[in-house]
Length: 301
Image 1 (cartoon, rainbow, N blue to C red):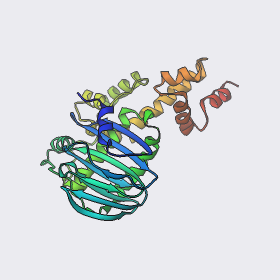
Image 2 (cartoon, rainbow, N blue to C red):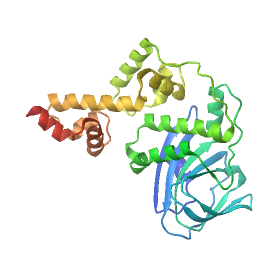
Image 3 (cartoon, one colour):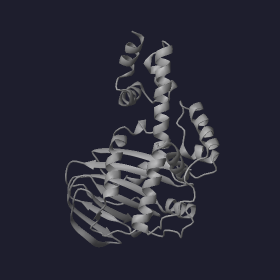
Image 4 (cartoon, one colour):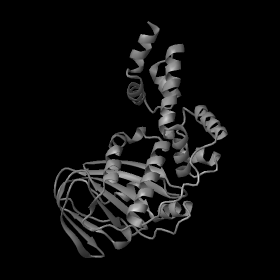
């Protein structure tokens, strides 16, 4: 089976970038979901062509104006000109796309496999979404623009992104794309939240694994829900996404360890599920208002 890293790299191999960052997550079944930021600061890139035809769509969001670009589908020129900042467009890889990138670009690319669309439609009891369609010149979509902007901090430090956050955001993104570009009808809300027993069960599971990169899928399976259903039910019940709730619990455990032990910051970071001392300090300060070292010194003195 293809690894997440190999899959992610293969999807952007056609770009000659000055900077590249990627986040990959699991879909509802066997599909992989991917978001990439590709940036080139100089003109003259030339043609970018996917390595092979595949049942994949690319949803592109321009973070800055792309002055000159040509798009060919099945060897036919379908768009020539500029793409304004915020423009959203969709490319179907079965149409043998070739983009002649004549100017600098900074673009967020969501890679949406057909299998992911099939999984979402099946989960919601809807007809399959056979394709995603968008005007060749693109369109403006405030929801997608906000989503792309919200992902920028995570794409700056992809090594710090946990599975739970990645799954939640990319599943929500793919579901929105299926509605906006594929005509997927909104599913009826058959369930609004978790029962009191389920909440206690999932809290125990999350507390027991605060030091692990716990996935939405693993938690959802305990509730006999899909990852998307679980994320929605958890937020409806607690008022917080599960990844944000877990982040706060990690900080609470860290505060206890800082107060009651002499463990160094680096060991506390690891024990509480942070990938590095820097990651721990940044998250701790964003929630508590002080770095771990300053907070410990204040509490103990």
